[in-house]
Amino acid sequence: MIDLEPHPEGVVLPVRARPGARRNEVRGEQNGRLKVSVTQVAEKGKANKAILKLLGAALGVRRSQLELLSGDTSSEKRILIRRASQQAVRAVLDRL
Image (cartoon, rainbow, N blue to C red; front, top):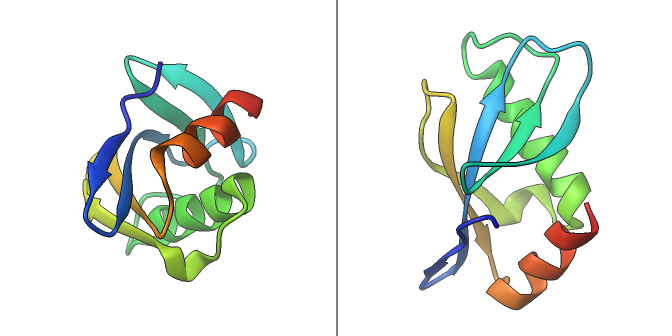
């Protein structure tokens, strides 16, 4: 189960990222984190932008609602989903 954290502005989603993959996809759960793969390489923030774009589409939220809180240069990231409840995010994650 993915360890969602409450935040004053919404929910924090822990993510395990894999840049430089063959395709952009949400790959499920690993060690309490959402595992995602993106084709962009990890240079100059390209992979981070691709991850936020992928998550926006997968979760059905606007890109402006997503913010990278930590893990700028790490594969383990924390992403804030603004104006979202834990229940709503959990329901979407269960469908993915």
